[in-house]
Image 1 (cartoon, rainbow, N blue to C red):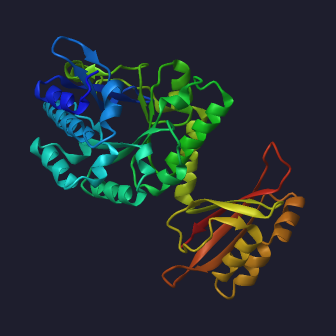
Image 2 (cartoon, rainbow, N blue to C red):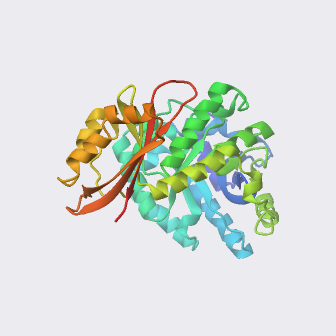
Image 3 (tube, one colour):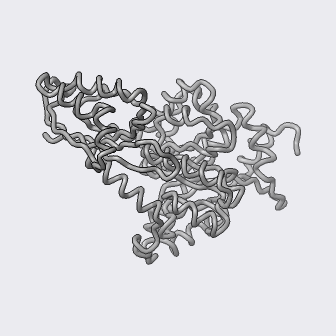
Length: 396
């Protein structure tokens, strides 16, 4: 490997030795190509192929990697232009290093390149690795906001490859979460691996992120990822990275003519359960899980409810005190009595399946509205604790 890798890469760009290869991303259920990732390849004039891991990590130590990123963006735009002409355009993701966060006029340059090829912004996905989120998180957040405001999607790449933090992901306004192949190392047959993956996918879906599984190679991995409702599959099981000519040809073959199966035939029990949960959350904007035995609760869903001051987790008794305080004065005692732990435990002991009450609650806008609260008693197979799911519905 040359000593001056930066100068070598600049020469490689000038000599047209750098190339964009594309790895398609497939719909996990239908098998359609719905997006792709642009991956850099260095092929010297004498035919020698230099693997990315020999030069990309070195370039990433400084902002020299930025030249490669901009080159790849332009190549992706050229490819999308050809796809638009053949009627098979899908989004292409391009990797951007953490150095771009402090790059002068990044937003202007991004728009200038994309608009120069008349590419709709929603056909470009900006990828940033999870490791970049750890440094200068506030600047990263502002940078992501500026990218998304211009109509581009933002993806966190390689999630799970390093010191992953759900906290960092939670705080970032990203659209796509790409699951690193290292999380599939046990072929999705190890119980701990499956639990971790299930948790990550559930977390991402609740935050309304699109999920992409990278490095998928086996039927076992694909089958399990479908049970997690993973939207996109990227890996050798469907296609390896390929030059533009092969990618464009494959897009023609796997475009709208592909006949998919009925979703009801291929969905798994877990994915069906996710659809059911989505319907529940549409009907009930406030959903609370409580353990009456341990006097605890946590919020599972809290969107578009009349009042937004409810705590997300804590002591169940305190939750009822807080809830009663938001009710109409004439309804406070009834609410506090009906949903006290003592009353609910007695109702459970008597074999009642649920407890329900209609009250008037003060909204954030100062208006009282009818709210129906129903506590359903549920049983977990592993414990004897008395568990409750509270479903709260704005009636007016």
